Length: 304
Image (cartoon, rainbow, N blue to C red; front, side, top):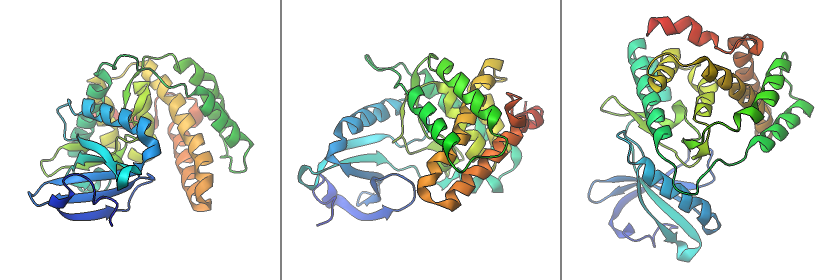
């Protein structure tokens, strides 16, 4: 018996295709129904119920935003109560990561602005009663300590370490908002209508909205600087304040160094990849002596 066969309505599904991409431990499937509808099915252990109920409730809330995204459809039990399932709307299209290089710089910038506008809308949603920021500073400082004591240090990392260790505790008091939690090109779709579709909300949480932009340096800039500049402009509806850049530099420093520590569990090739991304961040931020990255300084005037 397939693990999804006792889900209500599964008898009306015509095709169920496993999705193998991604880092999530959940099992994922693309569902095509006899009515011609496409859905995303995610299945996880029943022990994850508290977290998944929060996730589902928040995704329903995010669905209020006027953007193409994986809206929540249904959640329940399957496999006789041993597992939980979540059905979400399928966002049709191609990963922006592969689509952007074929597009003109002006179109890349336009799509970046749209992505930034989505984040602005998401961060503007009022929190539900009783919701607040998860305390992450201690965990992050421990990750930096593991990196500092490990054997995969990146040359010239001292200023980045000092910046992250000094600034992260200060940034913990910034206003709390809903976060996508993993906002980068790999989780964005270029839809057939030429819009930005947003997927993979399974790392959503509450925290500092400015932190969402830490992924731009590692994952978006290598693919498209115009998109990256557009994302900043779309979020701020123009030029961001200096305080944003100062905070982002600390988040990027943490992300670059922490990713090297994280990669250790996946072998030398992944460590080397994260070290290369860290070198790029050090170069763009002039060794973290400069809060505004080089890619923004050099390109912003072309799309203002």
